[in-house]
Image 1: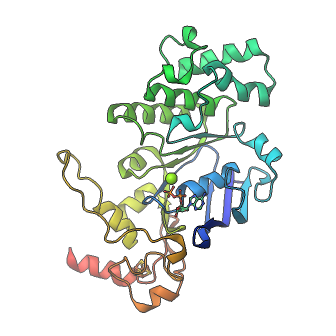
Image 2: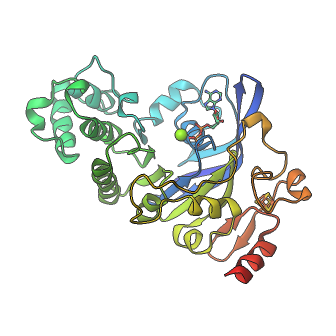
Image 3: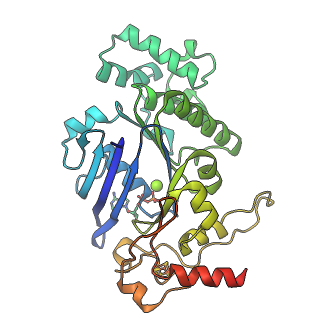
Length: 329
Ligand SMILES: Nc1ncnc2c1ncn2[C@@H]1O[C@H](COP(=O)(O)OP(=O)(O)O)[C@@H](O)[C@H]1O
Ligand code: SF4
Ligand SMILES: [Mg+2]
């Protein structure tokens, strides 16, 4: 049985213009120790999707479908049950480390809290374990900084502390939502390498959200391309990179900065912008923005076409587009 199995997940949110579906029937699964990436432009539903796994959605969000974690159905669980799973079996690293850290508490207290709460460690035991964790994530001179506060650390160090906190109870699944976006380029690489080595060392499963295709290529073995609350393409990272079957995936690759491009060069972007949730078309979410759009795209939700290697693509014009691309190149 997979560690995580998400089936037909729908999430409805209240927006200023009324209720709208932010996630529209997505399914995926993750084995123990497996790594999964989620890519897509801002506003596609990536964060909402992983927040639902943590039970951290706004209280007016309506979730239907199924999220099975190990033996447990998470949809419909109350806050008390979710609290047992969150920070214990599932750890999360946030884009902005201060989301996880409380400015008025010392580091030892915060990183140690899940250990005391979920594993019942004494204060002294937790302190010892926190020191080991901080040393593992690379906080220099950790022994003398246990009683320091978050603002006494740099941005990169705060993210390392956030990672230590997510790891404290030895979770089976680590979720990282754009964990390096708020950091300097040189620090980004170090943090990513740290996450990667911890995942390997501890045999954790990983869900990594990133808008950086290079990061996805280096870090995860399979991936989901999300647009408009839907998964438009999914499969092994190598297969998706090699085929780039969906027009939206093609757009993401075309908009990617070229390797070695001088800084400040304007990037190509995908024509148009992500529509508001309430304005998404009934059919294919990419209809209208996609240069291959025909009338049927507006009304039909594209079913998944299966390519070799468990590679799935949701586009009703897949074959015609493949022919056009082949003729053009
Ligand atoms: N608390 C909320 N209330 C209403 N709408 C929200 C809320 N959080 C996110 N949204 C909307 O849900 C959509 C998906 O958001 P999100 O998952 O944060 O996207 P991503 O992480 O891919 O950038 C966006 O249209 C966003 O405006
Ligand atoms: S279904 Fe239509 S609009 Fe959607 S990606 Fe395919 S061609 Fe474009
Ligand atoms: Mg997000």
